[in-house]
Length: 252
Ligand code: NDP
Image 1 (cartoon, helix red, strand yellow):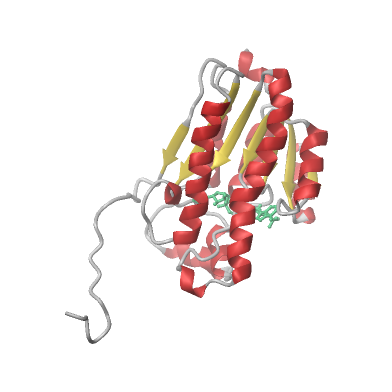
Image 2: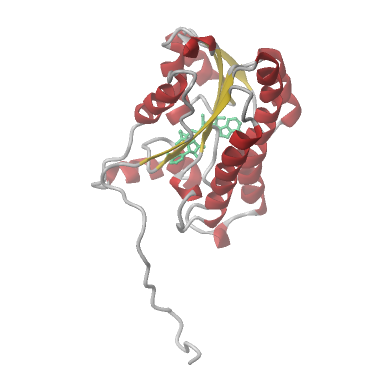
């Protein structure tokens, strides 16, 4: 089957949530899978469990990550590593949070893809999977996070056009709320996850996203699954928000 020509997968942000589930799913198909993130103990455990290869790397360390990509020569890149700093509002963010968001969510996936695509073009074969978000497609309260994911959306759209005729496929997955460590990291409070789990909304599970990624990867080579928006059944997007001003003199 054509889709099995895609044999070597790099997954970033593999120590938790969507990335770890994606490594389990892709390694489970027998593909050589390289799991990348910063926490080595977790990577070692994932390797014991799945047989994946692993490397400790910060995607913000441009030189190191490009060395890894250049050496591994992936056929599949899953740009998953991401942070949600400032998801509750821009005014509380530090300069470091802003820089980390831009470097992790935007700069790194673009650099990794640029490097991987060189080899893919030589082989006329490859699949880039970018993890976007509904925050990149719709108007929501997270201005910085939404801006980074919008950048990934347009990057994916334009890259697909740029690579037309090469056989390289580009898929963007845009999830709604997934139950991972994301909100705990975003709020700087590990309890964030527990709080989220407390609500009555049933979130997506990381395995739901991993299964979706596998669907795109294993589609026949004539098929490019371009964009998938996937939400919990109890989460919807849209509507107009009315918010009365809180200050005394509204300046009428
Ligand atoms: P998690 O916080 O559970 O996982 C994030 C992963 O990214 C971890 O493995 C972390 O590993 C890795 N990571 C973060 N920064 C770096 C870095 N500088 N270098 C290398 N790895 C890094 O979150 P999710 O699984 O939820 O998030 C995965 C993706 O899904 C993100 O891009 C996120 O924006 C997106 N998403 C998540 C949604 C959700 O509701 N959870 C909804 C929509 C999109 P380590 O710390 O070990 O480096």
